[in-house]
Length: 102
Image (cartoon, rainbow, N blue to C red; front, side):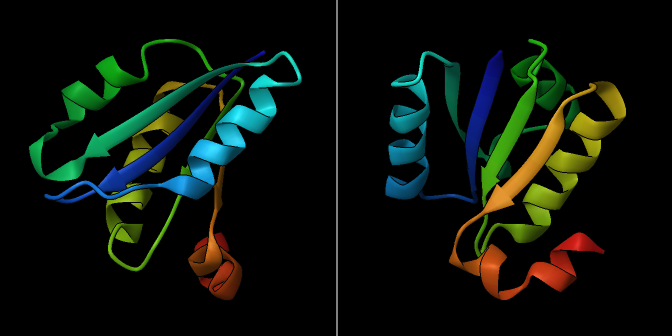
């Protein structure tokens, strides 16, 4: 099973300790995990398809107030082009679950 965990940022990258810790935890159980840091200010739709050219069983995003709209766009493109299950997580996701599920 191939899993991708990603963090989207716009401009200046920041440390994503939660998603990095999750990647390490899942790898300890023998899963193949790719960790991607995506700068949304420098990426085009065609680049997104290239970033996600591998077929993943699951694609997870760490979301925040500053990256939620860009993450929605990425999820939409991935969903239209792959058969991956997509999930999001973080404090923002927990506090805004109803909005995210729409």
